[in-house]
Image (cartoon, rainbow, N blue to C red; front, side, top):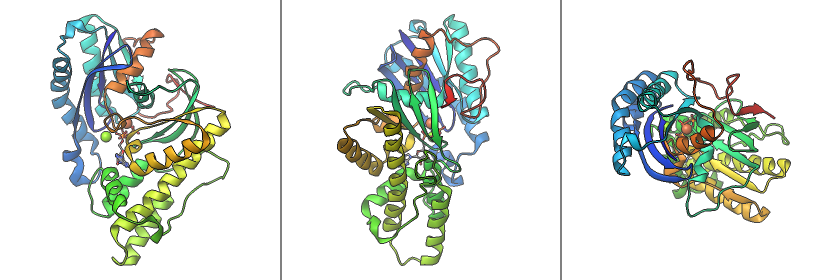
Length: 341
Ligand code: ATP
Ligand code: MG
Ligand code: FE
């Protein structure tokens, strides 16, 4: 079964063709990073307009890259939410019109479930075994989920304020490094020494699975203004990254232990972080846990992960009705997949 995936929840317009939920035939991503760079974050109205410009070329490119025509498709899978409503509507409207015109089914995919399915798209790696624990760590979300099957997310804990990626982006903005902050700070941190400054780790309730990153962000901002340039920026970046990674890794493995799982997936834009990868791999080795982290091109937003998750919606017969709409928040009531555990 060949599924066209479409993603437009934030600042990437993406299209992909995936076979049977696991095999990427093509995956195209148009990033708007250059457009939002000078604003230090995503400007929703600009994002929507650029999705309108990019959506047709992306879908055409995805079909051309695997030598297919629209008539060869079996279904369309599109991100339904969460995300920016204006941005989502572009992909959603396009996908539904496309499926209607081709007389094939269309499914609406939960973006975070899409991120989780990115670990099933690695032909060289063994996929996770259900039930597993997933840490979704991206620009808009930081949460831990128990994943009992392909279509269910049980929320175990989440950030009470900023997402981890958001903390990277805000620190980068303060340091004048532009948007997105993750890749730049990650690279700077590799040049620095984390032990020269200590930033607080918000473990909150020691036994709980919630996160908080806004205190860390303020601590770094305060340090930057008081230090007056004495400490190298690389050392500050490394100390900030150590604090983020410490909390993410310890909470993720605490969740794995609590749920009695053997598999942990770490997904989303921040999963591309080298410090996180290294520390999570060490911890997994030590505890005998199977760790699954996607290749960098599958960490950030892409449509292959949406098509991969969409395959399971189709198998379950969860096809969109004519009255379906997009949604903005991960836990909007009545949405498939997410429930509190
Ligand atoms: P969401 O998935 O929550 O709706 P999003 O789609 O905007 O949000 P992603 O595209 O998954 O998020 O990830 C983007 C985020 O990942 C940005 O905040 C970016 O700074 C961060 N990021 C990207 N690469 C790295 C890295 N190497 N280290 C840390 N953070 C990174
Ligand atoms: Mg993005
Ligand atoms: Fe995302």
